[in-house]
Length: 120
Image (tube, rainbow, N blue to C red; front, side, top):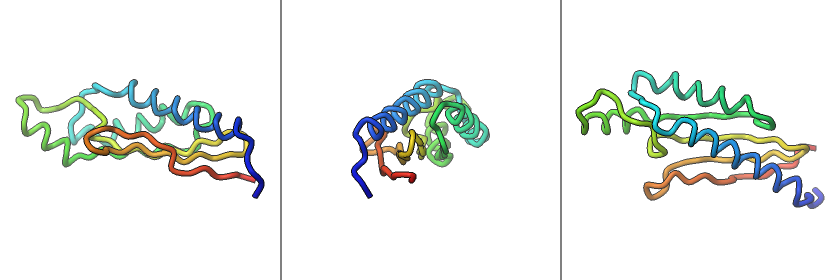
């Protein structure tokens, strides 16, 4: 395997960052309950998959953690934040695929590149 020109890999990583920013900031604050979690996760996936270079998005919402947060409040819902979601995305730019993930690390939603693969 030959060394990949930095611009292609950097562009793929940049595209991943755009998708994470869009996903997080578009949906943060959305009212959510365990009953609406599956439909919201599907909407998030479909919305982000519309963007260029996006091959796959998988959003998982932790309904147990949601239920715990709701039990501690007076409302029957809470607001979506990074503490409730895990995301995996595959971004393809030219002949490079970037695999990314977002997960909670020390109470912070960490977004990171987990792999870079040449598609040819």
